[in-house]
Length: 152
Image 1 (cartoon, one colour):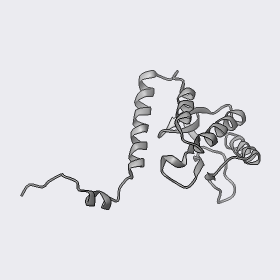
Image 2: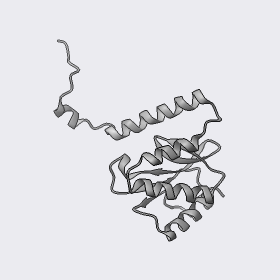
Image 3: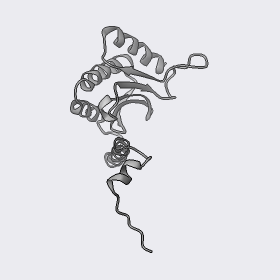
Image 4: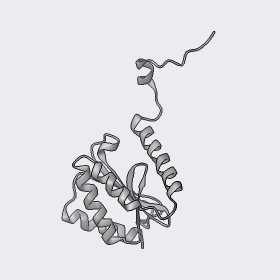
């Protein structure tokens, strides 16, 4: 008996795999990799990051703009680049930290995440991401210190 591949709305709601937002992020990552391969190592990745930030709705855009400035000022060794369609900052091609806008995955708050490349180890337990509802001057100073430590 032949089977049908037709998907109904009821079947789509039961699917337990990746969300639409996650699938979109994976597609963005594939496009980023293909684009970089075509352009080579001399691509202007910072302009891509700034363009992506400019597309963000508020308050994500405001937070991302300030975060970009704080990271650039405190860790000039990091190179801005897109990573799954999000602003990220890398050393030697490896992401050290990234900004995840709240709107990207329809979450309550944006986050600043650090990878295992970040030198933030503190004992046997330490945070690897921070919720960002907004950025105050004190928050920017704390993030600046974190980023400096991450690249130390």
